[in-house]
Length: 389
Image 1: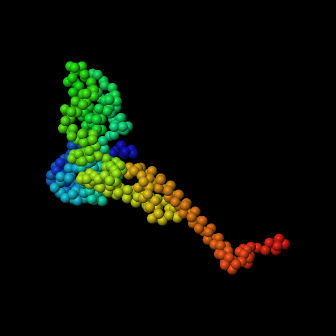
Image 2: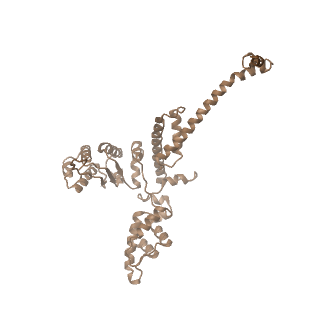
Image 3: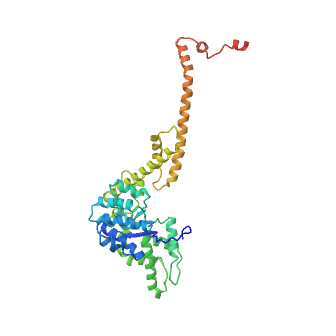
């Protein structure tokens, strides 16, 4: 029932699909139909996917289904596969723009760090990627509250006879072996318990630093080169493995001018700088328009407001809340507006005093006392006459 009337409709709150391994746009559309079929038991893949293989036509059918089932959000995972697509990269970017415009629902793109290459050199797509906020999910820092909370929560899921307390030694060892990567941490936790079960005969059915190190060394041997690169913070080694994400913002903030990052690290830094530049530019434009629309800053022109907003945006981190930036920009605009008003008032008062100054200069040129000219020009009244009256 809806407002007292019978209402029968199936809604898909969210829909997640994986980008095909070969990056085929046609297969991506078919994955959309199959995901709906798996949820609802329909046959849209057979109807729209196999009978009609034109991508543009399938997009129209996707639009109809999105509206019919009220899809709240579309999540597309593993988008880095599009880099292996046979299609031209510009065509792929246009496809995502068209998908967002045509389907008309929020679209979230998820991928590894390699996916950033999709947005290289394309302002429109980079702007769209950052318009609703872009999140780079880096590994958790050892001293962060996030890692502390995650580890304490994970530790509660022990299934061994002897419950191991989460000591500082265990915390340090565990982080050393997983480097704050969520997936590695979970797998290491599971495998460490499995290994502890095999050591039951030795009376060690519990998680110890020794068990964790042995598990990482033997069961996670294949990822040790990547882990070593992270432990040593070796940027060049990290970029040999495309799925390892490093925090490029920290590098840009902390690096010295005489340090040169070469190869892919340098290229990635340039790409990240462009993305941040586009994001700041968009925030500046939107914020300037909003503040100018308030109509309360009578002494500021649009260029004054834009310069003021640009300074605020540039001085704050890119992840700052929009409303906080807006509040600071308005406060600065109020200060500048009042300052210009005061300057105008002072200038007006100065102009009013100029005739007296001119008379003084004229009196000095004639070698007379300024009092005489002030009296002649009516600035000084005859006090005797005033007194008699």
